[in-house]
Structures are given as C-alpha cells and as structure tokens.
Length: 156
Image 1 (tube, helix red, strand yellow):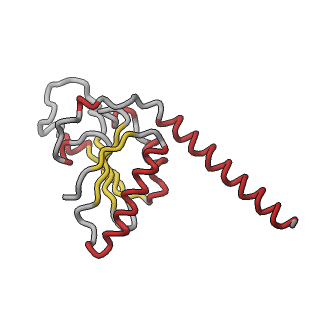
Image 2 (image 1 turned 60 degrees about the horizontal axis):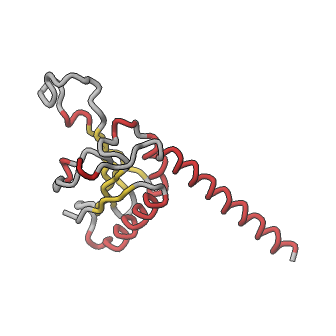
Image 3 (image 1 turned 90 degrees about the vertical axis):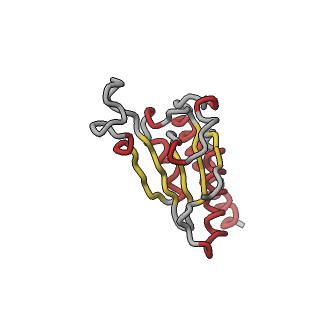
C-alpha cells in the first residue's frame, strides 16, 4: 500500500508540473494580440501566409516563419535589395518542441495576431499518412491548449 500511495503522489506531482508548464506557455503566448481575421480571410496560397505556418510530416513538424522587415521605410520594399524571401525561415522541430518554438518567435512574426496555419506536408510519404495525420491533430490540440487560433489548410 505504501508503494501505491507513493506512486500516486508522484503522478500527482507530474500532473501539477504539466499544468504549471502549460499555464506558463499560455501566459507567454497571451502577449501576442488576438488574430484579426480580416487580414487573412482572403489568403488561399500557403506562400502568401505571413504568420507561422506548420507543415506536419510523420516524424517532425516544419515551422515556417516570415520575420518582420527590420527597415520601416517603404522605399525598396520587396526589391532586390530587400526581398521578402530573405526574411523567411523554416525550422524542423519535434512535435513536443512546438510550444517553445512559438514562444521564441518575436512579435514581428505574428502579422495577423495569434493564429497559426497547419497543414499536412505535401512531401510526406503516402504510406505514413496515418502518422502525419496524428501529428497534425496533435499540433492542433497543442495550439488549442495554448490559446492559439488554428487555420487548418488542406494538403496540396
């Protein structure tokens, strides 16, 4: 009986630690304003999406981020001297690193507010479709737990 009580106490401590960690993550992401749907409602192509974009594969997630332009001047924006593609970054992360990766993003990467697009990777192996779908659903669940709005995109 003593061993069972000790295991129960340890399990309770682990649950409490997980809840505390989730609350800390939510608090960090709450600093990002709520999304403004009118800014992204008409976007139909993944390449036009300017907020974080998650593409799920069987074993990892690809997080695509477009950083804010450091130069506030509209002169030369999008030209050869200041191409938008130069601000684009892609990171491959494990699914359990999703919250930390989003928290680490600067405020300038959230052009539409606290909303993330999620899609199955178009490069994913068709034989691993079930694993890919599980990663998509796990990412959506994690984002919902963190208070992040999810826009799920169909696989292309």
